[in-house]
Every structure is written in C-alpha cells, then in structure tokens.
Amino acid sequence: MRAESHHAVVALPDTARRRVVEAFRSGSDTPGDARSLLEELISAEAPLLDRDSVVRCGEELLGELLGLGALEGLMAQEGTTDVLVDGPGEVWVEREGRLGPSGVHLGRSEVDALVERLVAPMGLRADRSHPVVDARRPDGTRVAVVMPPVAPAGPIIALRRHARRSHPLEDYADTHGVALLRAAVRQRRNVLVYGPTGAGKTSLLSSLCGCVDARERVVVVEDTAELCFEGPPTARLEARATTVEGDTGTGMATLVRAALRLRPDRIVVGEVRGAEAAEMIWALSTGHRGSMATVHAGDPLEALDRVEVMVVAGQGGAVPLRAVRKQVHSALDVLVGMARDRAGRRRVVRIDGCGRGGLSRLDGPGGEE
Image (cartoon, rainbow, N blue to C red):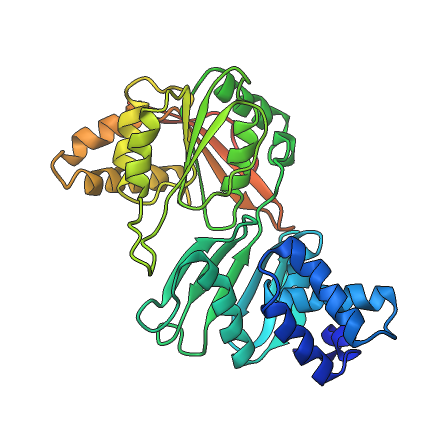
C-alpha cells in the first residue's frame, strides 16, 4: 500500500495505535458508536493531535477495522463504479466508464484481510472449499470474490457500487428512443433489457421502473439488490445463498413464484440467469403485463435464445423447444439493447418489438448505434 495513504495514521505512534485498536475491539460493535469511540481513544493516546488529524486518523482506522481499508477512499470518490483487485499488486478502478490504475497497491496479507472483512459479516466463507463468493454488502455494494486455487495469482475481488438514484431515460437514448421506452412502460409492454456485463442494463431498468404509474404495485425480484428508483409502491425480494451456519438459501425461481402471490401489477426480475426464467415467462404469459427483466446477451436474437434455453432447463426438458419458443415470443413485447459507446457511456443501441411473428426494429435504421 502506498505510504501516503496512511498520512494521518502515521502521526499516531505504533504503540498508541495498537492500544487504540485493542481498546476499540473490546469497546464497540456499531459503526455509529465506533467513529466517536475511535476519536476519543485517539485523542486520549495522542492529546497533541489537532482535531482534523484526529478525525482523519479515526476515519482511516475505521476503514481498516470495519470497512474496506485502502479501498474505502476509492469507493467514496465521485464517479467510481468498480474497484478491482487482481491479487497482490495495483488496484484498478473504473470512473465514468473509464478503467485505469488507482495508484493504490496491496500486498497479499492485505488482500487476504480484505477478503475476510468482506465475506465474514455476511455469514459466508471464501477459501479453497468455497472459492467463489457473490454477495451484497449492507450499503448495496456488490461483492464478487474468487479464491485460490481457482485464482492462482491470489484472491480476486470485484466491488461494484450501483447508483443510489435512477437517471432520466434521456441519459441513455435519443428523443425517439426515449419516446419508445416511455410508451412501452405506459402501454404495459413486457420489456427485456439485454447487453454485456457493465453495459448499464440494471441502470436502465431502474429508470424504466421510475416511469411506472405511482398507483401500480411493483414486486422486484433480484439475486443481489441493485435496482434503485422512486415512484410506485414496491415490494422487494432478494435471493439468499446457503450460509456456513447452515441457513437454507432461497433461489430466484422460488422468489418469482412468491412474487405472484404478492398481488403485483408488475413483476421486475433484476437479472434472469437460470431456472427462474421458466417462472418468469409463465407469469408474463398469465396476465402480468408491463413486467420487466434483464439478461446477458449481445443482440436480440441471442437474448431470446438464452431465455429459451433457460426456460427449457427450468422445466427439466419436459416441454419441447418449439413450444417454449412460441411461449417466449408471446410473453415478451419489447427488447432493448444496451452497450457502451467509445466514450464509455452506457447507451441504448437498439429497440425491437417481439411477437410470434419474430423481431421488428422499432428505432429505425441505425438507432443509437
């Protein structure tokens, strides 16, 4: 780690710092109390430190003891969406759609400690027997961890911070595209947003949800809670993995079935990636118009193919692909493609109508491409 990142902590002698850490660990468990307790302990150990230095020192120790350590400052910077740790070495960060080095370096022991601080409070394990972890912190930050031996160069950590407010549709599409998207929501079309990782699918879905009439009830089902919008009354369901304590997990397919019993006007599935596709398509085919979902895909045909395959798998192959394809095309009305432009901005690149007759381009030749 760069020495300058510890400018305030260095002002505290090592022996005093150890006493502060020991006293803190035995004195407070809650973040609200932790900040004031740390400042009191630091002031007692180093009475000559000015107030600003005490506050900075407390913030850095708080990040080290309870938060993300050296990554805390990176995550707090304006415009940061992703912080990436590829084992020991330099940390990379994405800001405003641009990926680059952060200037922060971590050693192997710091990476190991960071993994422990990230996953342990969530009742999860990250080790050789549980090498892949995907979870969400209480503040909404999405956490992905891959451990050795799957990651031979050392633990890999990806932190993604999602926006705490939705953006207007104008941030993603031109005037014609915005009109088509608003009409799709207003006319209660079933919408599937597709695109590659990081293309802005969840962000666009949040913006679409924000256009729903405030008198309609929306039930949101997500693997990891990421959607953020204001407007309609909303019930939120989030999948849970089985914990190391033995708590049984709850999968997406179960939650989609539960959503049907919660009197939804619209069902929103944050990301379709497995057996829940069968439940979702069945729900959309039985009257829950105006529902929405996202899927990883590079173009509209691939998006439909992926949904079809997931539906077949979710039904155990009991229904012929031809029947599934007919059902999928009948359930989905509008497909919206997302991608990043050369400047790194997330944009709508294509809008298609969908039906039993196939796809029909709605945004005209070229669209946003």
